[in-house]
Length: 367
Length: 134
Image (cartoon, rainbow over all chains, first blue to last red; front, side):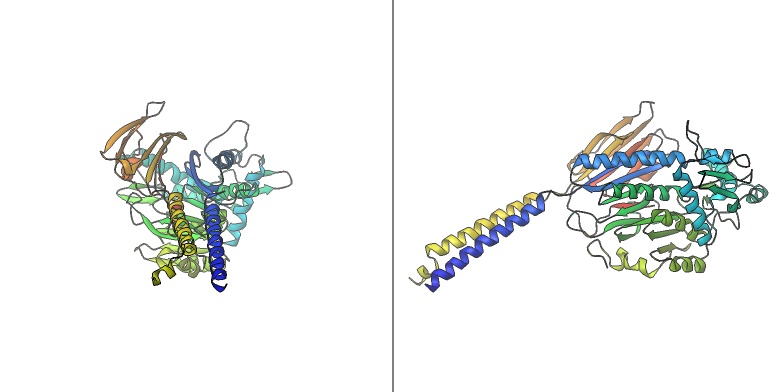
């Protein structure tokens, strides 16, 4: 009696185990999210890579097309060099400086209000009204890159004259009428320090609102991640940070890897855009105080939820001396920073250390 | 005689069932995991034009990619890695970049609208890198 009962239990257990096992395997394979990756090259002069976990290829293709479409629109609106038929963009605002207010899309109004707000909130280094100065640098850089023999530095008197026309309070935004007006006829907007990151944030939020759950957009190295990777294995995305000391062309080229969920990783560095004059590199991150490229760091990387904020702060912190830079980073909730000093040493906020691979973090667990 | 005690028909059924479940389970788990391989995807103007399993390359070879405007890139493939060796673009950033072989790496030639991307068909791990901040 007792023996057969035991046997029955054993058989039942076996069957149960078998069912549980089969169920586990079924769960693992059915309705699985697949990782898809696709890129486009026609916005913000860089490559944009979209990574997303979706159930089907069609689902991914739909989100990818929408993302591409929105990036194209925002690229045109935020363009300072080119005109597009039927569109008023930042160039249109610049062309009408001192002449008249220009009626623009809400996406432009929002970007400019965002830039003004953060300019006041931070230390006033990242200034979209600096276009007269950065425009001169741009011109000399382009000439120098196209013809290295003829590369020259912009004359300081020319830069100083342009710097007289960079008062951000003279950027007049009329939200009721949807217009932007530059009161100073010599003023030019340059949104290069924020446009890419801001656009990435806008698009990612729109995709989330439309149902995308797990994705990462890299707009030329400006990273915005959403949710977590739906591979059933990991809790966090892994984002490599380029080592400014190594050539970007080295085999690995990674300074470190940070692991995040909903958030952005954005770097500003002296290696990104530069030209050589008399054997010396001059990069594109211009300090409004000296009107020359800032030399406090090789690179600064920011982790923050909002990609526009991360983009703004990566420039702002790059342009500030270390004490002020660190204070600013620590004063804003949810913002972490990493600095690569001129001698190659790395400084980082406490919160940054907690998510770095070199400090033991991984994609497995969110600490 | 005493052995008979341990191998009765009922016992055999249990052990047999367990064994079958174990084997089936193992086969299914192994089967569901893809075999690790590294693939290079070459796109021109957003269109995929080549997909190369870099793990299966025995002899190194080169091929030429040409745009409709007559601009070109010459791509070299070896076992496990890929690079651009020659290009018509002025800055030659793609040529200077050299070899790529890891999943987070890509070569971009903006003037010719060429992208080479590495895809790793292996299960994700805790150390997977999804993107690169640069």
